[in-house]
Length: 321
Image (cartoon, rainbow, N blue to C red; front, side, top):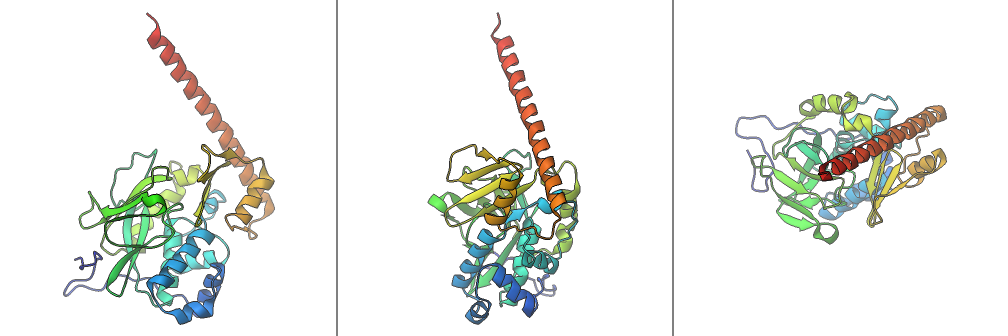
C-alpha cells in the first residue's frame, strides 16, 4: 500500500514495517562530531528540511563510500548500529553501511525513517533496471512531504530530494521520476558522466533481512566488482572524487583521470581528501594492499593492450581484399 506521498505504509490489519533503531546519546554525539556539526545545536534544532539537507550534505562529503574494508579482508554485516559505530570510528562503507548508519542517526534525531529495496545499474554492467537489492535507499516524511534520502551512492546527490518527478543537481543533470519497471517505485537517472547510469527503488518498506543475502554476495563473491576493485568516492559542494585502484578521477576535471605516484600519495589522499585515517589498520596491511592495487592495475593495462591489439588486427584483416 502506498500513501499520497509515494511511500509504502502498513495497511489495515498489517503490522507496521521494520524501522531502524535510534542510536544512544554518546553515539549520536560522536556521529555528529564526525560530520563536523555541533551535537547540541543539532539535537535542539528538531526535524526539518533545512536540517535534513545540512546533515545529508555533511555525510556525503565527510563519510566516504569505500570498499577498502573488503580488500583488507574485513567481514561486516549490515546491522545499522554497528555500521554507525564504523562511521564514528572514522571508516566508511558502501550503501548498506552508509545509509543504514545514517538512518539510525536520523531516527535518534526524531525522523521516521523507512528502508527501501533498490537496484543500481553500472555503466559497464549488464544488470537490468529494477530493485534487485544491490542497493539500500531511504525515505522520510516531513510536514506531509516525502523525501528520498541517500548518502550511499558515492557520487550521488549531495542533498535529499523531494519524492516528486523533477530534474535537479548540478546543471539539472539528475532526474527523479516514476520507475518504468518497479510498480509504484521511483527511478533516479544519473548525470551523463556519473559512475553509474541510474537506480530504481521500491516504495515498499524493507529491512536488513531483505538485503542480507545480496550484501554477502557483493562483498565476498570473486565476480563482484566490489571485491575486484578497491574504491573510495565522495561528493563535495564543488567536486566529485572517485578513486578506483590507483586511478583518481575528479569532476569537473580532465578525463580520464590520473594515476597515483605511489603509496605515500595514496595514503595521503585517503587521509586528507576522503577523511579515512585508517589508524586502526596496521601499516604493513596497508602497504600490502597498495602492492595488490599496483599489481591489479598492471594486469588491467596488459589486458587493455591485448584488447587494443586484437581490435587493430581484426580491423586490418577486415580491410584486406
